[in-house]
Length: 230
Image (tube, helix red, strand yellow):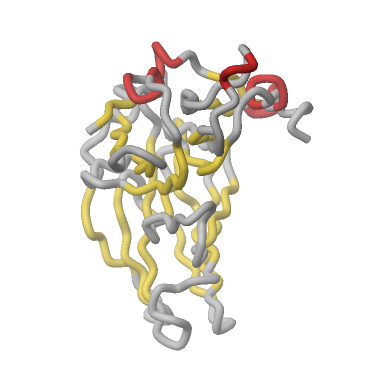
């Protein structure tokens, strides 16, 4: 599968720890971020790195993934680190998913997604009533004219990491969400139609209502992913 997706060759010399999918430019395709770093120093052999650069892979759809050069991705990707856990979050509430990385021998890095031109999006925060409050195990399916996308709330999200329990759906150029279906762990299903985009919604299990928490300030365009470290 890695070979078919064009991930095998660029990842083979690396030792990856934290791995997360996120839609950096909100085009509806989940991109891939990897935190790398070896468990021991074998650099004396002349070809094995100890500290390694993290990697960002853009999702090209049927064409697989393409590694974006560090000079394009942002300053954090130019560093050689001993990366470990990686978790995604939208720390500044701008509708773009950022991520945090821990390191074996250095402080945590908070990497902000500063992509300038992005697609539309819709965001969901879930609160269980009959189900557990955090809605772990719930799935959300979003249908637009161009996409049918499904995301799930999970309890653990990789090596020593838990993502922010917010589901972000990149919609590309779609300006309407025709249908949203939420399947809760309790067996309850909530369904909503003609949902406005570029909005963050709170959904409470079984209330049959969407509560708007904010409108996204980001523009509805598309372009090249970019990040900045804080």
